[in-house]
Length: 325
Length: 63
Image (spheres, rainbow over the protein chains, first blue to last red):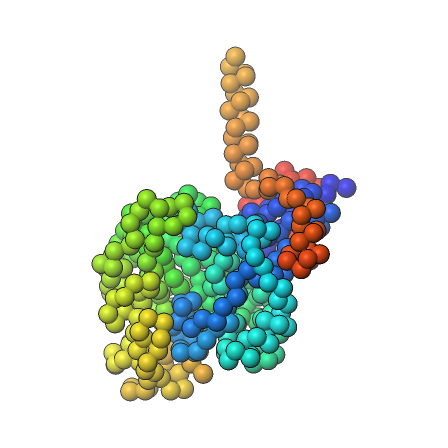
């Protein structure tokens, strides 16, 4: 008996000998079996506005009961949540919160959604799946905030219980994924397409890092791919980078760079383009792509006005992509 | 001399490829600590999905 196990959850496909840990830190070979260390053991539990995920086309103004465990299957040098994503689950302060308890807390705290977020829900897959299936039965929706680095088979299974997702496309470049994130772009693009195909409401985030992925040409390529493969009505968020973790030598992304990216995306033909992590006037509002009137007014994470009824523009009745009620 | 150099280069290439594919190269865990944390309710030890037993890491390399 060899004692090796192969994990086929994500494209890393780690082959682990006895007592070895996978690249995600949360799955190990224990006595010849692959086990997860983080099922029901979140290290982060919060009630957040859903706009914080960010999800702007998903029950605006509502709250998401948000959980995360330690670990991640990517290792981005600029990780903005590295204190929990780039550490072992033995070294975080974990709660004992089985799926039933998560759903109970979501209901009792008035959340309409459970968000699997902060670190990477793919690596706590079984916990995410079981909690989502239970939440569905209680009328609670489920959203992922993910880098989308997952194999097709587990993703297709997970999509059956997931309603929305914000998927990070970190850069439209294989070199960037390999050198900065220890991953690859192609499986992420595939995950985006599968999620949309399976009826998940997908929004995309691109964290813009000065000098690494802020070239207009790369942003154009990203937008073109989204339009062609996910549709022009896919919401896109350009997010501001702050110097953290292993990439502290670069300055925070200038607001002008994010505005430039937004202008490019709108010119390329995307309908809904937002800027996050920095205040840029009107760049976090939703406008009707048809009549151009204001549909959702946001100030930071808070929603002060919604002019969408039954999924349609309150002025011209154009259909607006999203989950609105 | 030439043969030795070639052998070293070949070893470096193979080793680099293995590291890139994460072939059984994960960090070793402290099983006793994990079992203790599990008894205390701070970690779980629960079967993971999408896994299978393999004969050797070399034959089962990821893409």
